[in-house]
Image 1 (cartoon, rainbow, N blue to C red):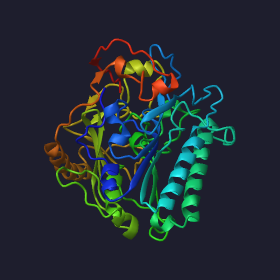
Image 2 (cartoon, one colour):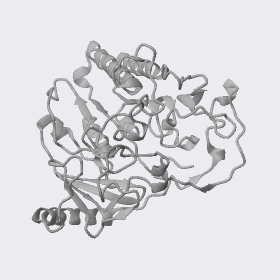
Image 3 (tube, rainbow, N blue to C red):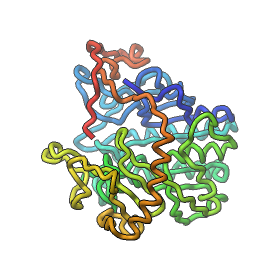
Length: 410
């Protein structure tokens, strides 16, 4: 039933104060009820959906997920926006691409600064690609989807160059989590040497590539060892726009411009959570696990495996194992796959622990409890009758309202 609270200040809300026009294309996923709509949180335009393209559903027990243009739905996945689960064919990435290109052209013509959040989801199972890309890669349907995204990004960058605004436009490309190995190999990516995948707090679940592009400012071909977080894009983007972060709250993100422009590297912690539980922390090259868990034995025996082909004794556990007194510590430079925890008696373990402990204590002391948004579920508040459904004849009758505690198995 929850979503993004009004008390949170989102990047587009702050950029708007500096004269930016803001658009989101694709997946929102910060709440689907009217009060959580992206246009109520700083975006001026939206084409996309409040969730992934899950389905198809029967519109009786569960409604198909709507696709919005701005305030109102313009159809639903698997209906007006078809996805062929058998062949993997869908034109959504091409539609999302055209939305992005048209927005950039319009803002350029208006000479308006703009923020485009392009949140495509073709590589999320069920994976899809448009007909020209299907069957063109050696990585199956997943590779086809990646090729189409790659081609689309190329078209966006080419437009920025052709309009003569590439040196005045900052582009950042990344993902929200590691590859979902649960969908591999047909519909999932690869995490290379890293352990496990999405849904876990091992490196395979939390680490992803990031590419920054700003011709004339960021030199091409650099590789930075800076540890970054998507939260840093908030602070970095505000800095680019000449704005300061809000001063009435703790801001977790760092400004990465010194890293990208001057090559500075800052030693900073990254905290890894599952739900409310601090599972691990990375500081420099060291990573400490306070809890280990992949998924339950019950799920694992049903064939749900977040770490296929990977079993590290005492690390990839199917019971929730506590290590808060003596955390498992790894050196990610020498052991990026988290396979060889330090001996508790080693000098390096004691040194790493002495550095990590006060950082974690300070973090936990400074936390302010948020209002839980994922605790209460209710079938009646799903996407039965989104705004605009009456114009399309697509309104569905919701079931009786029965709020209940949500169950999140992971």
